[in-house]
Length: 311
Image 1 (cartoon, rainbow, N blue to C red):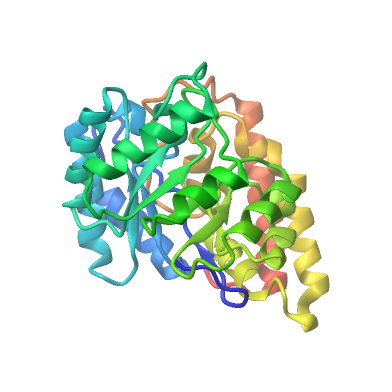
Image 2: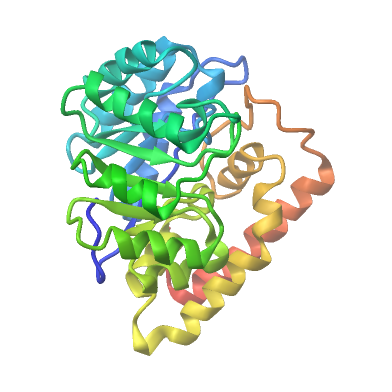
């Protein structure tokens, strides 16, 4: 997942399919993993917020990660979250368990390494304590909005990348100038990659030198995000690139509302056998929301045909 200025990667933030009774649908997880891979994903982010990680037990978290790694069978690297509630020692122990499943890197949630009221100095100290207690396990950061969003400054990110342990960063700052600063201070770190989650400036982020994209839109149309990563800088396709960027911006709200229920419904419309059941409380999936998703599906089908994308 290294940073390059040419080939860009797409790292889907994976869903967890459930059966209607609330149990994990491992057959569905198999097909979902295959969907991402067939679309051209360069890696997978398992056990993340889209996976409803906070609603999974520790055993289920490990089971889903292991299952995904088994299905990928070495064809794509997998990263997965490894820090949840508890002491630094407890977090370090679970990081080791996640690493032992075969992940390329274990992701640290910025909002669970220190309290919201803690200073950056406390946060930094806790990160280094975690690194000390987890041997040489490669790690990454995720500026997850839950339980609260803690953003890493460019200076902090550089400090951690300098350890040689940090290879991945999922950025959610929503600020292009800040992302450019983060890219500038980590430009000479060959094994590190910053992946942007905010699609409103996806093309600008890619052109600025990000390693790629890691966004919820990949749970609707992963092949479109791969196409954007492949063609963002293609001089012959700039009109199409602009249209894709506008499509993502125009449909931003509908894809976030009552998520991930809506993305599961969208996948149903695409013919994917998946329940819309979610353990996470996200609000009511109303007929009006369903109609909006159906309209999104119709708009995407038209765009897909224009770009000649293969599902």
